[in-house]
Amino acid sequence: MVTPDSLSVWLNEQAWPIAIIVACVVFAFLALKISAQRRHKALASEREGVTEATFTAHLQQYGFDPAITGATYRYLQEVQLVRFPILPGDALDEDLGLDTEDIDQTISELTAALKRDRQPGLRHTPLVTVEDLVRLLQASPRKSRTAAA
Picture (tube, rainbow, N blue to C red):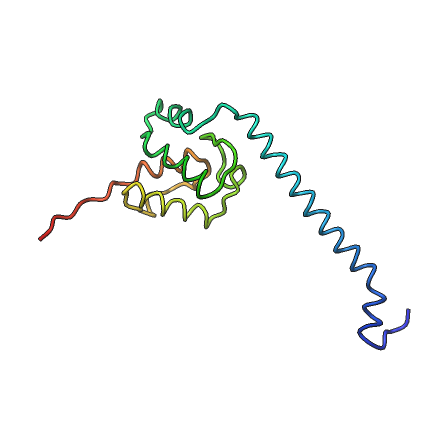
């Protein structure tokens, strides 16, 4: 193989390898997208009877506040755009697709909406599941009202 004299000659010689690499990347992207869509459809059909009411009732029998569990379920569905019914044991990252920033945003906005004080030191274990998130929110103290002077 001769050394190319110009950029256009080099690109012409490298067109097939570059096209193959681009095609592989596009194929991998499409395969992952189709896999994710199938998984979401499977989860939605498996959890057909799960609603906010059943989610709240399930956790209420273990002593969780129904207002907190309901707000958490609605927030995950409406703001974080989880498009399938949520179970308490769902992993925040693997099942719901939330990254660290999404989880921090969720904690901040839900503690504010529920009129709770966010205390970052309150958490001594990582948040893994939706139940862990609800447990953290319930353990957060209510905001105290300050008297007017």
